[in-house]
Image 1 (tube, rainbow, N blue to C red):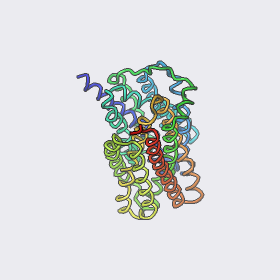
Image 2 (image 1 turned 90 degrees about the vertical axis):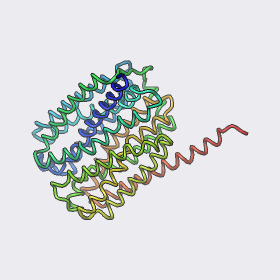
Image 3 (image 1 turned 180 degrees about the vertical axis):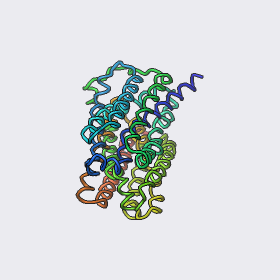
Image 4 (image 1 turned 45 degrees about the vertical axis):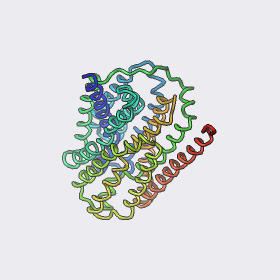
Length: 393
């Protein structure tokens, strides 16, 4: 019974990350209907992803210092309460300025949740099941790609983008209650200080994780933030079918989240390398081949398969390489992850408004390729360091 409750709590954490990813990326799914309704361009509407992402990064960095002895489970509940507030304000927003205010609450929620979720997940299961606990918890990210953003896109096209925000807010309230009931309290054995965060930032594994996150996640969201216009204009997908395309992308993403687990158990660094190469190849296919609805239906799942493994692969890398600075390293990586989403949306908006979709995709492809090279360099230098420290025969 105790084991069932523990894993039920981890599933509740996955539901929470589902809500957080959905609220963070929801504007992407409804961009084509939200922007004209609020009287702004698609590039300007992309700020609704950028603003919360930047704020989430700041919040994630300071969260371990601020919460200290606080039950990390309650931090997650506070994060979901902020989602409820954000969603309610978004539903009634009369203009884009008010929507951006609502998105500030989303930024706070994202930063709080991402900073401590992995620590709480690890606190629910024995050490021998740590990789499985992380995989299940982060499956919520893949599930958000499967159902969250695609369903939001469908609701936006058929009922209205405001209804999509309302539904996510209601779901956040339910998940907050589940976490209170099912998740065991988790407190850090040490009080994190700003000096400890600086020490973590200098740790080799954390530095590489941050670099990988910047390159891969910024690249991904330069293009993915504007996937709706890409599907509509480049692949000539009807607006009513955009949700279906994102659903195919998301189903593949959920598969990728679980499929990468065996490789991560053997080598998290190899997992990040495989994911980076796969995303680069997928983006190249988007640029060269996605010129019809049929091509989009073939390419979107391939893209989603690799993207679905990004968050769990990089978190596994932090878990494997951060050593004694796991909580601080997790917070720094979470901050970087969310700021990278924001930067991707911002840079993508600038590129698409000034240089077009081709330049958008090629920029992403180049950056992800650079991320793959960083991962390969980590593996190469890790082997060299291992040889230097190996005992003599």
